[in-house]
Amino acid sequence: MFKTRYKSHHNVKNIISKLMSNKVVTPLAFNKIMKESPKVKEGGIYVHTPYCDNICSFCNMNRKKLDTNLDRYVEYLCKEFEKYGSKKYVQEKNINTIFFGGGTPTVYSATQLEKLLSTLRKNFRIVENCEFTFETTLHNLTLEKLSVMEKYGVNRISIGIQTFSDRGRKLLNRTYDQKEVIRRIKEIKEHYSGIICIDIIYNYLDETIEEVTQDAQFAIDLGIDSISFYSLMIHKGSKISKDLENKKLFFDYQILRDKELHNKFLEVTLNNGFKLLELTKLSNGRDTYGYIQNINNCMDLFAIGVGAGGRVGNIEYYNMNKLISFYAHDNDFKYRVKKLSGLLQFPEIKLTDIRKLTGDTIYPEILNLLQEYEKARLIEFFVDSFRYTADGIFWGNSIDADIVTKMIQCQKEEN
Image (cartoon, rainbow, N blue to C red; front, top):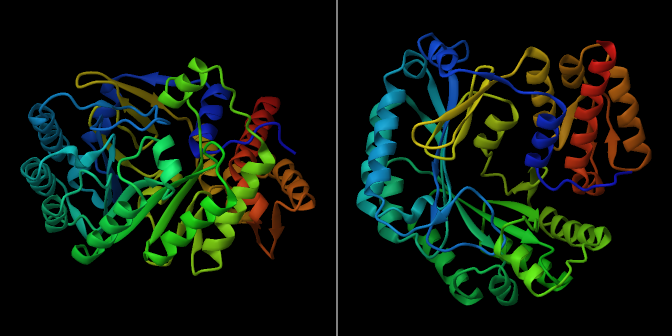
C-alpha cells in the first residue's frame, strides 16, 4: 500500500513540517507565556548533552565527539535550570517526567552529575513518582555515577546496546563484545533498583534471523524492562553512509527482509511477556515510558541545553546554541494534526479520539483510509477502536504519515 516505509515518528513530523508552514514567533511570545500560570499543571523536562566519547557508525544526531572538559557546559546547564525555575509558568508546573538525552549524558563525571542533579532538584517542582530517565552507554556508566544518579531520583536508564551480536557491534562501532555487554548489564542490575531499558537496531548489514532472535532472547533472559527497536536508518553524514560511498557499495534495502526481521523480533518478545507500548517500544509491564507519552500527547516539555527541542503551550522551540532559540507557533489545526500523529503511535486507538481531532467533516475520509488498512490486514477493528496487526506495527509510521497527510489535504480542499 505504501511507496515508502517510514521507520520513525521523526519521519512523520518532517512530513507535517513540509506540508504545513511554520509561523515563526519571537522570544517575546515565549517569555509572555512564561510569566503566566499554566492551564495544565503537568509537564516534563528534556535536557540535551551534545557530546559523546565514541561516535556510532550509524549516528547523525546532534552531538560531537568529546574533546574538552565539560565544566563550562555544566555551568551553562545549571544557569538554565535556575533561569527556568525563576519563571511563574515553571514554578506552578508539576514535573512528572525528566529525560536526559544526547549525545551521551553519562559522559559527565560523578562530581559534575552531582552538581547538575542537585541544581535541577532545587529549581523545579518534581513530583514524587516522576519518571526520571538517563540515556547512557555501558562503557561510561560507572557504579559511582549510577549511585549519584539514583540518589537524585533517576529511576530509569536507557542503554544504547543496539545489538548483542559481536559482528553487528563491530559494524555499528559499539564498545565491548557480547560477553562483556552481558556482564555489565548484570552488574548494573545488581546495583540499581530502577527500570532498565535498551535500544536494539535490526536489519543492519546482512543481519540474520538467528542474530535478531538472539537479540530478543538476550533481552528476555537478562530481565530487561523495555526495548526500543528500530530498523537501521543510514543517515547522510554518518560514518556508515560514508563507508558505503567510499567503498562504492550499495545498501540493497529489501522491504520483505526488513519486515521478516521486525516481525521475528516482535514475535519472540510478545510471546515472552512483553507488550507493545508504542510502535517501536516494548515493555515487560514495569515501564510505562511517560516521556514518550508526553511527546505523543503534545504536552509541555521544557527543553534545556544546546540541541534540545520542546514545547510550551502552542509554541514549539529548539535551542540552536547557547544564545539563540527558534520558536514556532502551532495554530489550532496544526496542533490537532500533531496530536493525531502522536495518537497513532499507540498500539490501540479509539475512533472517538480520532474524530475529536479531525472534526466531523474530515473524519469520514480518515475512516475510509482505516477501512482500506483493515482490508490489507494492517489493522483490526473493535467496537469503538482499532488495533495494529504485526504487519500494521511494521507499517505504523507510514500509516501515521498517510492519515495526517489526508487530514491536511482535506483541510486545504475545504479552504
